[in-house]
Image (cartoon, rainbow, N blue to C red; front, side):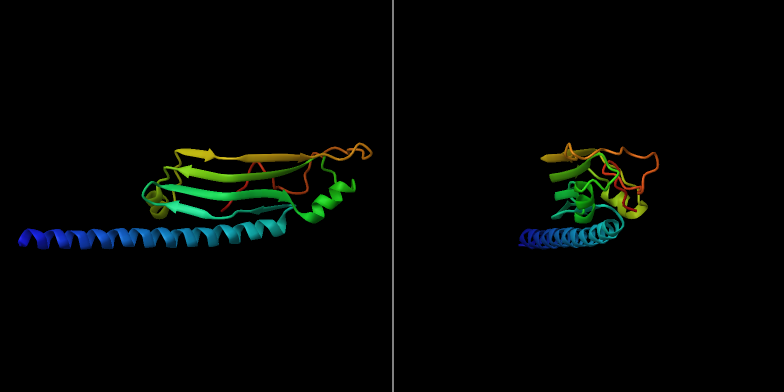
Length: 158
């Protein structure tokens, strides 16, 4: 009889702990999505490229973060000026990634000490397009001083 009571209490405590972890997981996903969306909106208003994503999935048990449908493409005004030959760019780039997985993060170290340790990055499907001007446009070349500090190979989030 006493043994059955201990098992029930243990199961209830285990159920509550699992429920708390799942709730924390959902809350972290929501916070991360809001934070990244705000930062990308700020970047999108300042640069020629538009960045976006679909969903962020966080698994705190494994320390994994997955970002689905990430894309970076030139904004419409920048693309139109490039198509008319009014841009100094010799090529425009467009990037689409179906899923980016960051694995084995030190989540607690990230939350407590703000140290970001990452063991691996996995990219599922990557589409990278180059847009070059038509032959009737003369490429002016890239000046040594770029107008913007933004580049697709280095996207920084503070």
